Amino acid sequence: MRSIAVTAAGGPEVLRVVEQPDPVPAPGQVLVRVRAACVNPADVAARVGRLPGGPVPPPFTPGWDIAGEVVAAGDDVTDLSVGDLVAGMIPWFLTRGTPGGYAELVAAGTDWLAPVPPGLDPVVAATVPLNGLTAHRMLEIVDLPGPTEILVTGGSGGVGGFAAQLAAQAGHTVLAQATHEDEAWVRGLGVRTVIPRSADLAGYGPVPVVLDAVPVGDPAGPAVAAGGTVVTTRPTPPLDPAKRVRQEVVLVQTNRQALGDLLKAVANGTLRTRVAATLPLAEAAEAHRRLDRGGLRGKIVLTP
Image (cartoon, rainbow, N blue to C red; front, top):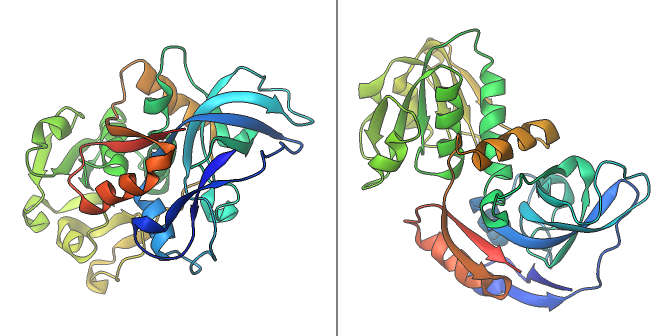
């Protein structure tokens, strides 16, 4: 099979097409022929070597998110069958690129995967797992007893967009940041107040909860109320200790039930995601160049 290897720490040019033996599913795994693999900022972090726990020695295969067709099953697999369409999140923090999603075939644990509902494009499905499960986990961490105000940074992005929608659908009043000229998209996510990206967040608080999906770090501090909670996607500096703010870092987890619910919501139109572009697998380097340049409205998806 063909896959993409990070051959050294560096720029997009270190991404190369390589030939590898076809993987064989172990017990409890299925072999997925990948139709779509989402490109995420976490893949860029892996490429340049900025990872918790240190860089992964190259060569390795990047990619967290896949969607495709089950083409073989290992022993003890009873809940998925050959021909099933699935999407899933490779727990890359554990696999460290063995496997990764930028490949024609992936041997995946069945607990990583959920069925793709009929009619849902695999390209769209591939944008859901990592970002959607991260947003879902953020709200689990907050564990709110009832409706409240929540400020979301990065509402134009993958995690922030899902977080804003899930919070609004849970009955919370949501304030969310939008990048320039993306206000209409963010407003359509069910938020009450759209915040310009350049705005001082202090002017929109205090709120009990900030879901810092970017994360912006210190600028979120003035927006959170004393005794409130800030959940970030990466570690950020401690905030003013006098405010007694609870700071949590989200650690995404595989969650088959939650992923299945997210995919169903996208399929029935109650949860929105968007694709900026699709590129062939061999153009992974170009996908990373576009991600590095920024300004994307949605995700880039590789189509092996």
